[in-house]
Amino acid sequence: MRHDVRPIEPSDAERLAELLVENRAYLAPWDPVRPDTFFTADGQRAEILACVRRRERGQMLPLVITTDGVVVGRLNINSIVLGAFMSGTLGYWVAEASAGHGAATAAVGLAIRRAFDQLGLHRVEAGTLPHNARSQRVLEKNGFERYGYAPRYLRIAGEWQDHVLFQRLSD
Image 1 (cartoon, rainbow, N blue to C red):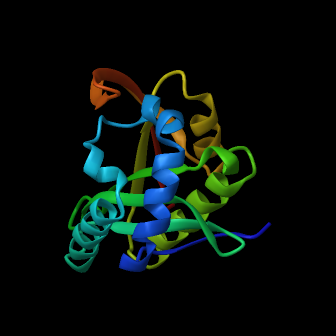
Image 2: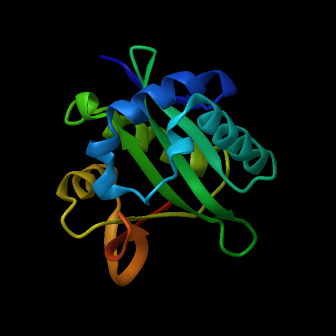
């Protein structure tokens, strides 16, 4: 299997909507509560267009994760801040059928390379729920180090939840 990442495109809306509907229950414990429109092709097209606008402003790097050319998930480097900070925040998901097959690990590695080599970032951070050992392992395999713990950090699955914080520095 060949895992890769590429820039998201409006033509990805239908496939992403299919994946999100198929994986809604699987992803729910790790995601914010979303309106039903988020899980439609039109909702995904709107999300993609918003991401493309943020990419054009240098605020994010929105990508899709592929296996053998087929979209199996999403990866973003969000909240990019340049200047003295040169940092961004990583987030990603893969469909349940692709979990445990190296897609997320490969995608994070490829995205980090882009963040450092193409965007010139110094630091990328990521947060995981404390019990999300699989995601923590993906980060550790890609050279991320745990650096903190944030109580009630993000509203996930309708509740303010603690997160373990990781970072990777370009040097």
